[in-house]
Length: 250
Image (cartoon, rainbow, N blue to C red):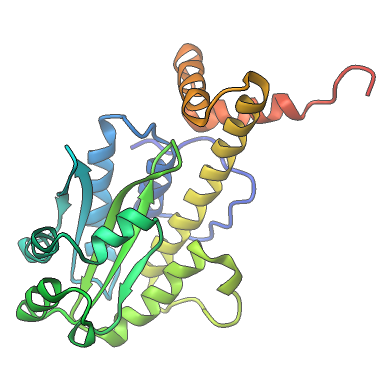
């Protein structure tokens, strides 16, 4: 996948790599694009390959009103996902619904999700982390589910991921991980949020100018991108910059 030439202002990206690029690419891609599933499959495989605490990974999306695993690094992850779907509850479903990471630092101790606990423990898994992912519209499109054998290794990963979703807790309490894959995952999430901020600002301007709803503003931005042959993020940046220009006589 070609790297976007646009570097969003406010990005704190420090680590570059295929996983970070895939996460940023997802944030830049229209939420209904057919490319989404390909990006999610790439994110799953790269996460399983690069992030040391993660033994297995998967992605949950909602299809025809039901949760579905659309990308997986192993049948083990699929089995744990399926147990949650059968129970109609679990960390991957919660992350998809509420749009924040859901961690299970000690699966053996959790009482909230019995089928999830039994399936995970039976397959030797001891900790999990489900991370909501978003595409161009800015809303959650999938949950990235990470499963590990070692709770002690998964704990720093969970802490670092939360730095992307809750910047106020970043700083001193969450030093960089010694695992390069974890840092690349976090870097990609942070820049994805910067991309989302640019797009959301552009949508807000369109809503104000056109007195439109958020859905109508997103459609206007998408049409404008298609007409100009530019990406969604480039079109959003251009919209914002145009609105920031001083008015005549100011």
